[in-house]
Amino acid sequence: MDNGDKKYEMVLNVLKKSKPELMDAEAFSDKIIKLLQEEKSKISLQELIIEFLFGWVYIGWVRRSMVAVALSVILLFGYQQALILRRINDLSDQKVTNGKTTMTSLTDEFSDKILLYRISGKKLTDGKINISEKEIDRLIKSVNRLQVKYQDIIYLIENDPELKKYIEAKMNKSKKN
Amino acid sequence: MNSKILKSILVIIGLMVFSCDEPETTVTDFVHADGSVTRRVEMKNKKKDFDPLKLRVPVDSTWNFKDTVVIAVKDGKSDTTWIRTAEKRFSNVEEINKEYSSDIGCNKASKRNVRFSRKFKWFNTEFRFSENLEKCLKYGYPIENYLSREDLDFFYLPIGILGEKLSGPDSTKFKAVNDTIDKKAETWLWSSFVSEWIEEFSMLTDGRAGEDISRENLKKMEGEVVDMIKSKSPDSDSVVIIRYLGEENYKKFKKEIDSTSSMITKRVEGWSSFKEYSLRVVMPGKVISTNGYIDKNGELLWPVKSDFFLCAQYEMWAVSKISNKWAWIVSGIFLLFVLSGLIFRIVKK
Image 1 (spheres, chains in turn orange, brown):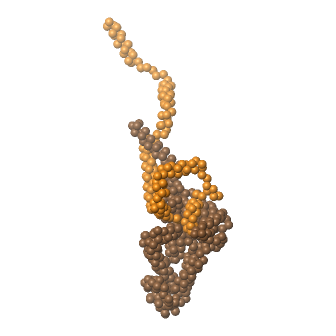
Image 2 (cartoon, rainbow over the protein chains, first blue to last red):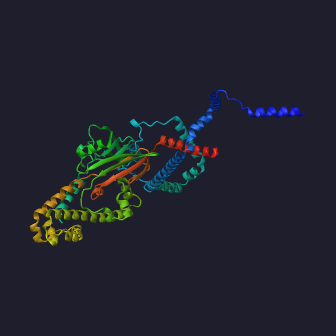
Image 3 (tube, rainbow over the protein chains, first blue to last red):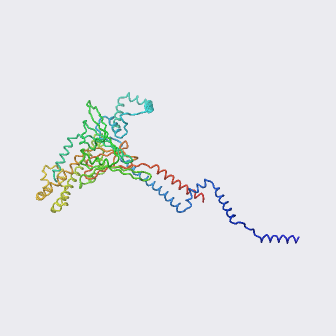
């Protein structure tokens, strides 16, 4: 057994002393690099796109500049909108809700409306007004609906001359205003 | 002060009153985003003919015309009104200014011009349009010195609205307001004319006038002269001046006095013959600011009267904006991109 042990130890020593020989080190390193590159090319398209788009976040000065520009855009937007809103609010004081605004000596109210309509540029050419049948139907339906809804009131007004007179006077007054 | 000017003005005003056959006019400017303007002039007349010499804004054969007749019947009587609508598209405001400079109508003496500008402000593009009348007097006083804020609101009312208020339900109240403003405006008017006369006379005499009729002393007597004019003194013009300047100075500076009077009469003639009209403007996009009135249709309106540009330039301006949708989209995408990048970085960490 002692001989066996001695032989075992001798073999171990010989093995320890003998180093493996690296044959063709360049080819070996090329092979490793090739393997690594192959590994790299196995990265998915999605990851590639994300890296391409958001690669800038890793560069400090680019990231800070982009954030600064984004904040500037937001501030510019806020400032412009606030200014516009303020000016529009001031403008609401100048609204003229009543009264004629053109110099017109026409006595016919309907003519005045036509005149205003023309001056505002909304007149359709050659005196034509195009209304669709659908719109006429809607108009007739809403008139009928109102007549049914207020049937009782209309009946009361028609049968009471004083009430009728009072209502007409009120309507004329509100028309003038 | 020379009441020769007063007489000239009264004659001119008298001629105006008795020769009111110029057509009532409303000018509508449709301003487009590219700076072109479609101008529509609507004229109403009691006669069929529209004399070009009596038109309130320049209109010639290069315009497109449309004539209509409106017959209104009231109390059994018919009232005929001829309406002429003229329209023309101008590629830019300079063309309108050229028409103004070659105007032969009744307002040709007044200097008018139109301006347009466009500013790109990334999210919006702003458009500014203005029509200006240059002031008549160099040394007149601003009307704001004589009228309160409420008075000024009334003073600058559009013609149609003023007429309605004076004939409407509260006409008594508005007529009283109108009378008060008329009196204050009269003081303003004469003070401005006297001031103009003093300044021009002082420049003509160029320091040769004695201490007693120096510019400063004449200015001190200004109020007195205005009161004299307003009291409608029956004194002749020479008596008024003698009382103001003194007989000796009157004889010494008669030439300068007459020159000053002629200069101011000429300056005022064009102004006093100005015929009023209304100006409407339709701007591209949304109106955000203006010094005009906004009517029920959302359109801008200004009265154009001679009083408004006697002592100060009368500017009728409006600013509107159009949103640049592509800029909003680009900015939105950019902000999303930056936000996504920051979120990506936080997630990767």
